[in-house]
Amino acid sequence: MEIFAFTLIAVMLTSLVGKDARVVADLSAKLGAGPGLYSVSALSAIATAGAMAWLGAEFSSWLIGAARGYLIAGALLAAAAMLLTPVELTLPREPTRSHGAIGLVLLARQIIDAPRLLIFAAAAAKAEALAPFLAGGLGSIIILLWAVAAARPLGSTRRMVFLRRSMALCLGALAIAAIMIAHAPIA
Image (cartoon, rainbow, N blue to C red; front, side, top):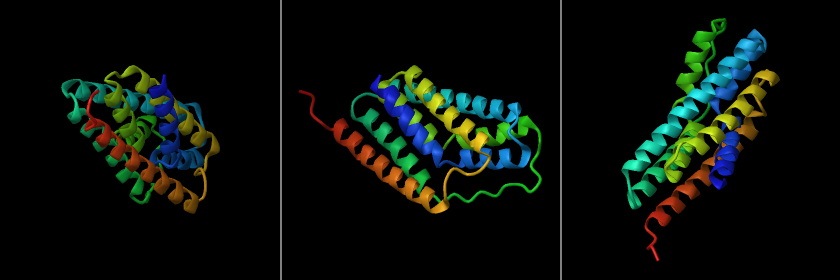
């Protein structure tokens, strides 16, 4: 249960300041918040959360001891690095109205982003995919559908930069903790 709560909160916070939420909000502002955009956003969140949860559980099952801790720490550090990169989105002036194209763009942006790397790390820590998949998928869906409904970026740029840096710092601390736990003697 604790992995579910951690993953849900962490994915919601990182999705809130993520690139995919900005893309969906901008598309919603330009195209309107129709049922197609809601559906494509939810389906891409489910697909990428499922893929990363499965990969995390699979890779974790191959590793034992300190190697598993390094895998988790690496995923957390990669997520922190993603959050430290500036968000510079170039959106097309005349976006396509094709839901398939929108879905491909979202899948490409989401497959290796901070929230999905957190899902990967949670699945690797638990060595099972179901709870991280459900929590990560739910957290992503909530934020993406909120972004579609809001039809504007969620917060000011300065606030988003501050939140992204703060979350990156927290993820770095979690990565250090994962390495320390991996090297802790078993009593």
